Length: 146
Length: 258
Image (cartoon, rainbow over all chains, first blue to last red):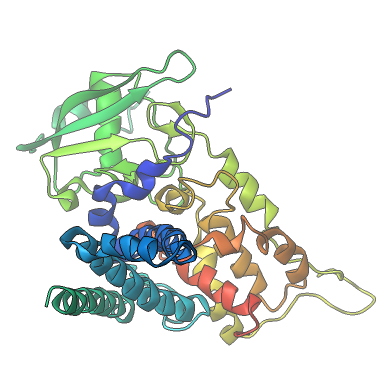
């Protein structure tokens, strides 16, 4: 009986940067979707905790707000903006693809095989989403650091 | 008795060794049944422009180290036996030419997400079991051979064949499951191979077993665990495009597509 060791890659299968090089921009989008999802969940929990301080009076509330008024706080919020925009844009792309649209049509494959589901439309959407996230982060920083 | 064929020694003496190039192959060695040690053994092998990774491995086995464990059979990308990680990416050893890799060193490892049997051979039970679970055959109450009703065969139009013919090219090599990031974390995920095969039979208008199959795939570790990384389709050596099959099947389950 073979050992089950090595039967699954575990987190290495997610985070290994060489996988992105070998499997392309779609794999990067998949990884960023997971990471931004986890990041936004963590932010959501932190946000609920922070805003709950309003119940403790104005002084405590003002003090908690000061946390985001620092350079580090602004950079963190810019990151949240980027995560939010990427997760939304890429999520819309995925919802459309997962309904079966924009992934090509099933047909007899001819050599050299090129998967239709990995196409330029999808790649363009990923690059556009990354661009929008970068733009939103830049605009957010311009406002916060003004 | 007259000799019709030349003697083996004659054949060998006529063999022209024209190879001027060589490649270093690094083979990941392990035997989990003995111990947990893993190491890479390096071999230098002469190559021609048509030499495949499997050719190199068989050269190593023949002349340098007989103990290298590798599974293979047809040598023409039809049997799906020789799947392995070649320079970090899953591929068929018989279908990957050394010249295409554009590297003086080739690293071969067993496929990810499968338990290793020995060296490059992996246990594919999980994939085969998942493949069986989706009932990869046409399900009908009636029979193809039914004298009373006069049915002789299930007729199908060429247009309907086109809907699933792409997915029927699967050779069960398991490369898609090896590349899938969900497979790397979820030990009960059905996997892209089985899901694409489920679509192949659901899209077949002769089949009447959709509901039975949907019970297997429409659950939390079934089709909804695919997050469309597309890696399965990138490595498929037969142009099956499992990612497309999965998304089309999901569209069907959502009632959006036929």
